Image (cartoon, rainbow, N blue to C red; front, top):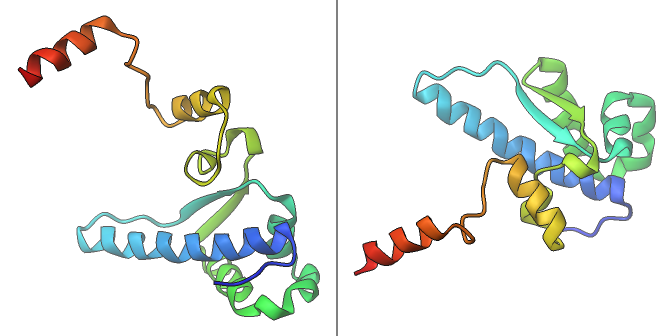
Length: 131
């Protein structure tokens, strides 16, 4: 655990952890002969993207240099790519933030989940399967 001094730093720390997990998953898939050249990560913090894509910006984050270096090394090797995504389209928010009903429905739709609670045929099918 660590305390972040800015949102850019917090996003950089979160991205480092996510990259680590994504690269682990890439190796797991390789064990099953599923090859992925480059893992794509979507980041909604432009400051974070600026820091990892422009080495001149890294003097502000010397205290978290290892996490920064981990990301930039994997970028240079072509193992990962980080692209900007508008906050409104950031699907990760579905699992990391408290959302109002409208925002929840939008993000739920982006990942392909549908609300079946209002469909009568689903309710009847569920009731029949429980009996």
